[in-house]
Image (cartoon, rainbow, N blue to C red; front, side):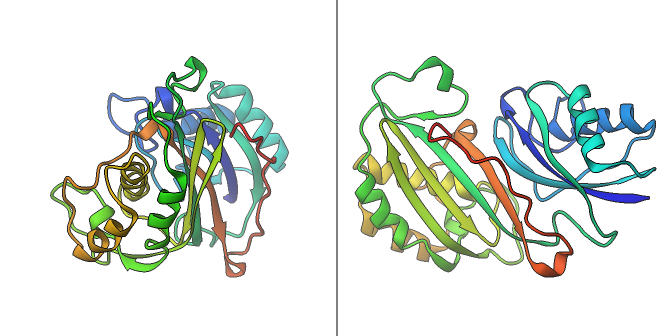
Length: 263
């Protein structure tokens, strides 16, 4: 067996999330179908993490074990010939057998896209959450400052009837940028709880619309309790932007094409 690492991009609109599920179309199933066509066997694909229904990825990181060795570029090209146009293998490389896309990851970056114009352009309906009033980005940035660092993020997680051993995570950066009517929330950290990024986005949007103040963030965070005070923003505005690895993982960073301001 030969282990390969791939960077996958996908438009999640037509998919019921990443993970294989009975009676639903998922990204993992679609990718494994393509691998089966290529190799005549069905390698299991392991991802850096799951994405939910409608969530997109620019830099999902995965690995699989191939039953035979091929040139990495040939695997990429063959899979892209088999895959539907809303899923693409961006990069492929051979990695050590001990590499794991999930357990070796040291960080992730997500971006959440919002359109705050009075009318949402139709071509953005699957990629931007529409808030039909101008957001106060400065207030959102002030609120975001309280979220940076290492905290218990229970108040910003959404796990019905579930618990997690350690809800403490570290946010290294949380940036909010405006480009015309497009506002982007970019968050980078060592890992995220279930629906944590969408919950952060949902609360920051409340600040941006004036429903909440920037100094409301700290008491919500310190409460360590999830309530209706924190809404979960819709999945279609979220993009898994990149996954990072340390030097001990045995791979170097795989650069992606530079994104345009349109995202």
